[in-house]
Length: 601
Image (tube, rainbow, N blue to C red; front, side):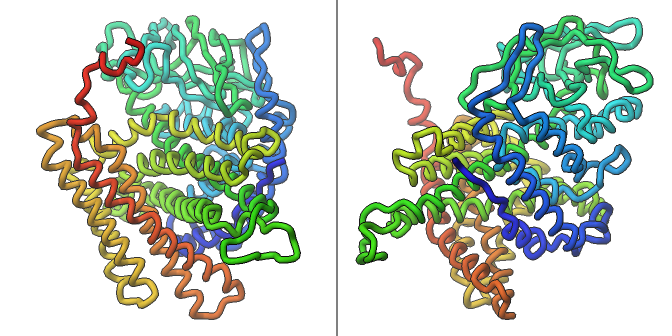
């Protein structure tokens, strides 16, 4: 049986020591995020996930969700009780606004908890996770009446939420949607159409499900400029807030999926379901992007979370499993074989995983702080800077984070050898569950194009130039420290590779847009490598300072410095190779005609 323990010590290190969240106590929501409160949330949240959610992960995957003849869906055994405990403990309210029953804590703590939940049970975490996205959209675009009607019970967990974009004929190209919204005399709309791949679309965890649905009004432009957003509850809500009659939305089937079996991914059929416009007509895509951007950060955390839980289990196995002898001589002469953790190739995989997960955790939590600052920083200038930076980093967190998260999960399965391919050890589930994160909320190819086609050019390149300056300044400052200088110099070189790749795009992509498309994935990975390098430089700086004061947990900080060195030496050189691939352009990529791909001819 696989196991999970929340990485509480490392999370506290990032939140309290690297980000120094307590220093933002003058900002709204941060005043109550004292170190004691942060430690309690991290400790108790991690314990809940390990003790309540993790034991349901394997069984939930094996049992899956069940659709019944009446279209209702039941979740696996234990999920309903776990969800009840989740709501009673208030975990879903942590970073939600106090106005609607939330605790108003910083997103940093919400993201930390989100990692723990997803590592323990990714399929379970998607139920409250989708609700959070729906809440974000209603907070930004919903009318005061809609907010009062839906948000308190969504935030408390009594009701859940979904996002309905995809249809059988369209995914990323939402201009192709066919779902229709017909205006009604009472001010509502009759929603008719079919949506697919709707995570948490139907289930038995909550009394109501509030669907946010993209649809087109009569006469709307036949493009993304003609999309509107509607709130469509599973059950209509009475004037007193109670649940009323069933609406015209039903689950036609549950998708048969590679992973996340315990989450009900549904085909939803809308048959003149009653819905209400959210925001302005034909402005639905902008409203939905609020949900999608929040979801993309959450999916990046899923990449981290599956890598983390797979890593934990691989470390335990590598310490216990005995095969062969250490190349330098027997590590345990009294035994017939040494534990496989003595072998350099096993160590390579484990160190890759450790360097990625700890660096990615820091990047995700810094991203969460930027989300907070984009809303709550003291000045409009600071808010705008934070918003631009998290906008730039979002496709990197989602795309690079899930590409590497899946690779790490696969490597950790490899540590197990043949046992990793057997279901009872749980490793193959981590690989299957990690795979979806590269696909949904915009495939990673879409993330790469968003980064390179939109975010690099945002406001004349202001965001990427700010990123370059920040990394460059921190490298320059660190080079004055004898211990940090080698790290800073190598990071500075990797930054130079990213800057050169950016310049190459500027010189070539306008002449041939395919050059941008062919190199976007490589660029996203270059920026991911540099971003995690910045996190490791920051963590190394803190660890170095802490060691100077002879702390009780000296080994923790020494390990941080050693891992930082590993990352700098083993990850950063890839930036140069990726830049050379990018600069090869698109000619070879696009050279073949379509028929040349057929092998059966």
